[in-house]
Every structure is written in structure tokens, then in C-alpha cells.
Length: 333
Picture 1 (cartoon, helix red, strand yellow):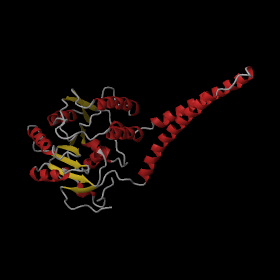
Picture 2 (cartoon, helix red, strand yellow):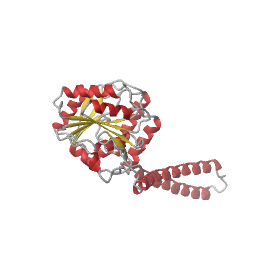
Picture 3 (cartoon, one colour):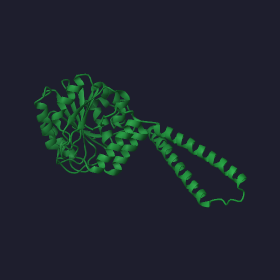
Picture 4 (cartoon, helix red, strand yellow):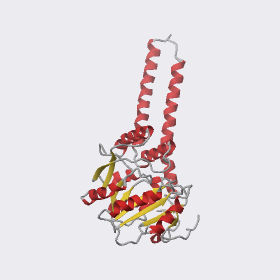
């Protein structure tokens, strides 16, 4: 993993020996909602079997507000909190990858910072892992997202089924729980464009689900714009599968076949009907169609080559700036 303290990565590790459950939350622009989030999690865990053996890891993804300051303050009040902030905004999945290198629990729960994921469901999710599942996803009984997000999620679900061989009926929720062995396997991924669900489905099919109530957002507005959603979708498509390359190959072969049949038709037509005028409109349409497909193919290939280029040049997956365990600012690049 790339980080600013690579010479001593152990300095970022949680060393609490008695931690059974780690709750990992990436934070972005949520300064007003963090206190309630921490209180809800603390109350839920206090009434569970893990009251004295859990930790909460909050990773600030370089929020433009005062989220990191609030995390620091809360870590002074609640001993179960460990915080970290990144040197710049790396995105939700990369912030989670950073946090996975801080957690120490046997079971790791991932959730959002907006309280739409009920902390009260955590014991039930961990129970599924104890029962034998490697991963426990959640599914919503009543989604509170905007219509465009729900539609996009359904499209993403179809693509994940095709590209990642996702089990039928499984909803890839960001609220999920992982066994420690899964976490260790995921942490070994060093690419700069992490897509967590793709990594999970590459490792296991021992997946359980629990149903939850989808709560209303406690503070602020959602941070996933249409642009960010498309970027994440492209990360899934080109970062975890070579199916698009195979599709491009098949489409190229199909166009070649159509072109060959068209050439045969033109030759035969010229022989049988020598006086027939040629259609300029059809020629222009054909040129535009083929050019469009060629541009699409080059774009797909370029997306893969670009990711390879960035990986070979060691584009960082994340970079820590501070943690609450080490308040000294890390060396800057």
C-alpha cells in the first residue's frame, strides 16, 4: 500500500488486543452528523455482546469542512474511536482501503456516515459471520434514495451480475460485514482504483444477507453526484473485468462480417444491375457508424491502458496525513 509513512507501516496499526468488532466508516462533509453517529453506534454496541470489545475507525477523506476536527474531539471523549485523515480526497472505496489497514477486529463492519445505515443491525450482521459466512451484506426494506439513484443502482446491479458473476438477488450494499481473513485478502490489493465489491466477489461466494430499514439522512446532502456515480461504475467495469475488451473484439468481428457481406452485395449488385445509381447517403451513414464504433473501441482500450499506466507509475491508493494515534503530520511529498 502506498502511504506517506511506508518506512514504518506498523505505526498506523491498531494494537488493541481485545477488539472483536471493528466498525469502519469513511467520512466526507459530515461535521454536523458525526456526534449523533458516534452516540448511536456506542449505544447499539453497549447493549450487544461486544460492548467491551469493539472499536470505531473514522477515516476522513480530506473533507472541505471541519469533519477531521470533530473526529479528533470525539476521539478524546470516546476511547473506542480511532481517527485518520487523508492527504487529499481519494474517494469512498480508497478511503475504506486505507481504513482496512487500521482495523484490528476479528470482524469488520463497513457503513456510511449518514445514519441511513442503522447501527442496531451490526450485531445481526456479525452473527451471520459467526455462523459461517465470509461476508454479510444488507438489503433495504425501504430505500430512501432519489429516483435516479435507485434506477442507477438497478442498472449497476445488472452490470455486476454480468461482469462480476454476482449471485442473483444479492444487493451490493455499502453496509456490510467481513471476516478478518477477507480483510487481509482485500488489503493485498495495491492498485490505485479499488472497487471493494469486485474484490469481495473475486474471493468468496459464502455470502449472507440481512434485511434492514433504510433511515433518512441525518445531516447534509448525499455526496455521490451523477459524475461520481459514473466514475465508480467505470471503475467496476474496467477495474475488475475484461468482459468489455471481449465485447469490443466480438463487435469488431461482427462489423467485419457485415462489411464483408456488404462488399459481396455491392459486387453482385454491380454485375447484375450495372446501370443502378449508387447511394451516397448510405455511404455516409456507414462511414459515421463505423467511425463511431472505432472511437468507442479506442476509448475502451484507452481506459484499460490508462489504468495500467497509472498503476506502473505507482499512483497512490491513499496517503495518510494524520491519525489520532499519531498527531504528528506525516512527511509531505
